[in-house]
Image 1 (cartoon, one colour):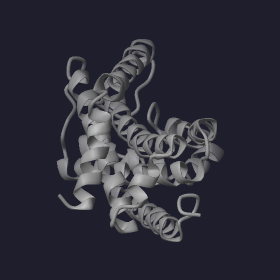
Image 2: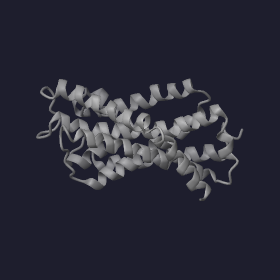
Image 3: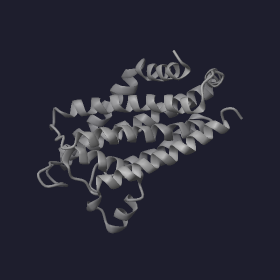
Length: 251
């Protein structure tokens, strides 16, 4: 096996060995969100015509699970390796910084997709979602997982201890995902908050993903794809530059 394939295998095996914690627990969390919010708001909220609130929630919860778990996979792996000191065994291998980045991102995408599929599977007991444009679903799921997996690498490289990583997640990742239209349409917000939501790149990932289910979205899916693609390009370039310089890894 090449260094890249070995590192990818190691990263996938790392979360798969504790799948009860890394896969089953996030699926249960998303299921609880669906149970509580659909029970409380089903009869009071109508986002789109002919689409019930529970059905509206499903794509948002699936995408939120993909994003959060993709970030958690790469960030937790790096900070754990740095704290325990075994990151040196990865850095000493004949592997390029691009392969290093790609292995961590692909493993993050795999975990995000597995969790997302699990969430979608359990929500079928409540509502069978439409699949108007399956290709859009796959594109935004993969792109969203890659973006948050890359952001997880940035957080893992930057953080020196667990509480710094927790602060990054609690003050950046959680607000971005929760305030991105998972539980509501931005058209239900006051004008100021609608405008502010358009500056949140996670909104475009979730909105484009939801379009694949219903063929309805708050903004054009092509605009969402453009914003998500640009976000990925910027974050990937920044991450590769950090890894190439050895920032907080080799220096």
